Image (cartoon, rainbow, N blue to C red):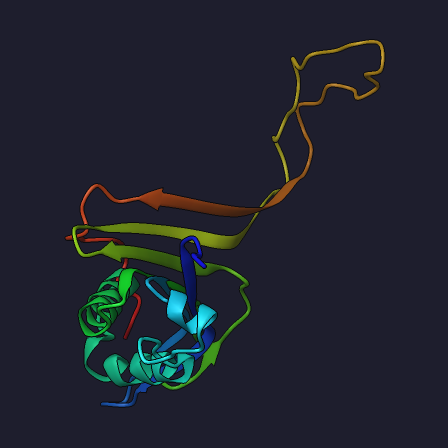
Length: 192
């Protein structure tokens, strides 16, 4: 029996790291997902799990590496995780790390408010030959209360919408972009 390409991993890894040095605290609030692609056929066909890293170990590795590697941009942390997992797991031909960062607005030196649904995102996909880095935003709420027109649109016999030069525009934006190089820099260093 032969299986096609397969993958497995751990998603929903919540990681909150506080920096309490000095009077002004910093916070990193991340949700991380790890996915391995590779030679895991034996686990499915014969129950041979010697090449399968437990997903609990993936979670623990994220926590352990965060201690020293969670500095600067979330893309840098995703690159460090993907490099570690690929180096330590020969059965994996590709590792993908996805990170969403929750935004906290500072109220004072030690207090924060989490009123926004917006998330900063990073996804690193690494093979033995190359790494690609995508960054983005998820659930960015945008509203314009005036001068948002919609006119000059195509009409047919079913069109009833009237043209306007003044209306409310409200939307949720999700955007992703791919970097030309995995070397960075990637974006604002929101961590601490």
